[in-house]
Image (cartoon, rainbow, N blue to C red; front, side, top):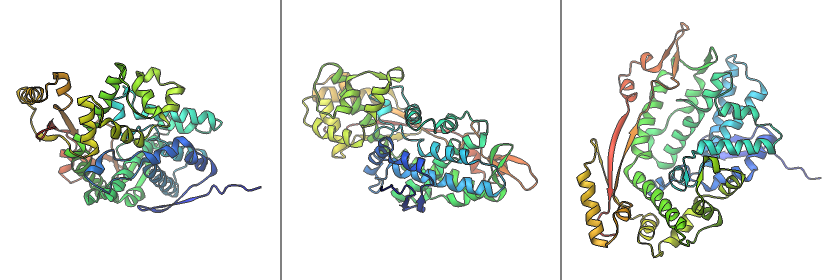
Length: 409
């Protein structure tokens, strides 16, 4: 009888070879829920700015698991007790932490489902998988929810210096070519330790933490909040919102079965049942792109023009300011659009809108990054560092934007 080799190795462009430690992890990776992540881009529409940014959530999940393997090995070497069950749970929790992401990252959360975050959907997937895998994910779910009594383990999965951030900064930097985000994740992990069941960074790692926080700030302004990425994501959200609005009014749209399900039904957290979850599991970037290609020729002025803008990368003009946008400026653009195209105010608002973005590289009130000195003293990185900029990085910076058509639609 032929048995499948489950101790596979992935060749990753960032870390080299990534090993799958056991058959349970292998079976989770092979599962259709996880394989779907191959069809979900890690950075949404950022490839419209950085052509190389086509890497997927699948890449990122495996990379995060690899870093978790290294972190466990380093902490054990330093005398931290981590059982085999705990290690397995850590690897599963970080592997599946993004399994609930919808097409194009966060666009779906703000359009065709109502107030359902990807974290909540990830938890639903994990609970469903736990049933399928004979409750072998119970401890991983506890860690994912931050409910396990050993706090440092929860911090490895979700904190201001977790394995998720340690991977995506380095990975996104590599695929975009933005070198400012290229952190030394290997050195950061080597400096990790545990004091009173809380994660700390040894004194020698101060400069690596400073680099990590600075890189995070720069990546947000240069990549994640890049003005073109910002306007593209807003257009995607509005395209899906318009599609849902038309569908609920009885308009027939061409779309995949999975996408139509979410357009035709009002899905909030309470409605996210097994049927919704199974349908969500077959929804990916391809459904959205395929639908928009068809919607370009739809007779609805709003839907067709929004779809064309994304498909052809002919986006709205965006202005980013340090002060709030005046209502009069918004009103002028809306009035001009209504006059030029004989459309309603509500329709014009799909093409003229304002908003704000905030960047805070380090949150003083959140789970802090603590530095362990040789004396045994533990201090927050902002106090431990002689880098004046760290205090600045802990303050939120808000910028305001307005989007409107460049010339003619």
